[in-house]
Length: 275
Image (cartoon, rainbow, N blue to C red; front, side, top):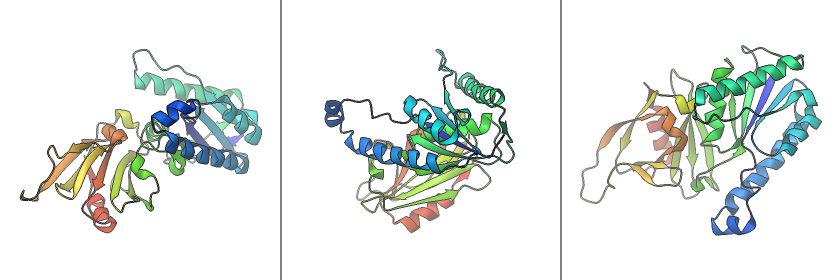
């Protein structure tokens, strides 16, 4: 049977096993609520998926793979077991995961055409493992159709995405990179960049931006400022800077638009380039 579509579910239900006291103490309720919401969506969409769909789960509870097997058939549901190498060699790990997928296809008489098969990404987190492994699966399986990131099927790490007003994507010219642009609940903007067809943790390409040191900041997922080195203050000149960040670092980086509206921020992001 030919597989026409793949659902990659990456590291689901990270918060589910955590005890209630730790959830309360560490402020994880926001994430647990989001996780419960998207898990319900995962299960609903599995029931509605076409028969030619392959479900591939990396990590997480077995009952989700069982649910996929019930919805799609046991041969169309796979939970990856290849162990993470002790030496943390990502290339070895990706090759092992993809070999496991190929072995499953062969064992069950399933055919995957890398030229035409489509795929989508679910899981946790939106900024980290989902794009990290999603790009790796695309690269190592040689998928010619870039996977689709389903933001609404993910749990984020960055608290400022809670109650987001608007979400947009922009394609970065001459590359497989997508900019994910958010209008946050407080009216500020945020953007991160994801490699759709490249293993992002191994991606040495640089994303180049022209940023204004009063209007823009580069932060980590917790909101800590990474750039500029010192905050702008009244009386300082306002300057634009050419900033280049390796793609592998965008797994944990954001540009925040703190002094511009979404429209102005979009123009800045639209001028980004890959080197």
